[in-house]
Image (cartoon, rainbow, N blue to C red; front, side):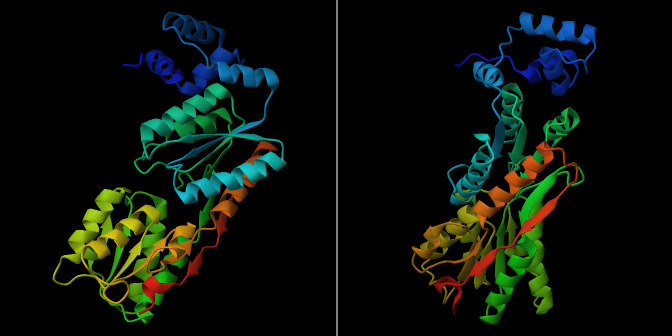
Length: 336
């Protein structure tokens, strides 16, 4: 078993202070009193705390570095966002260090802590699906470290954010399905506490209300963002006597889970069940049938997020909310 390496969080918990205080004390900041500085340094020695050597080399070279936290680096959407961030950052003399939270709150916290050790200039982040405690971001706020959120956001009164127009896009997609004759439209979503899920679900429900269709709560399945779990939920929906005749899926993982479930049941897309998914990948055009998709313009979201962060690094204190319009691309999977 890999030995536990003492972290800033360990020191903070032992002393009953914030990570920000520990970080400042170890840097010898005048913002922390001498008594606390001595306590922190003594405990760090006692607990064998070792700063990250990569961070030390960065500080020596006075590198300009941005930290980026994403929930899943292997999906096309997050890879495209990161590409947009890196393009904008490199044009303005910044390097980018990325961390994959793997949809874990604990890994997200660890990424923030690692970025503090690296002394990054600022952070761009998208929340992990199980993050409901934002204390690690509040500590960054208290330290004056700029943070910009994209897609899944929190604390809008403190941090700038870049999001898509998820409610309007979901409403447009649901209206398209209704106008193609669908009457029992299911929504396959992620955890209800995520603002991104709330926005897209709201748009879906607004379309049903607009066309005076009954809202069947059994057709709204919001759970973990996980392929197998979403596939199982969709299979259960499709095996009901009064099954849905269309599905709107929250993101690419859930979209392809639902797509697979429909085919597993021997149903035809779109004749038996139509489907539209929020997905930014080119693969939507290469499955059979070709998948109708709501595209995020992920590269632009990344570029805009980096632009806002650099504004804050230049001293701009304004809190921004930038909306990058999504694009509904109709293909075979929803054309009845």
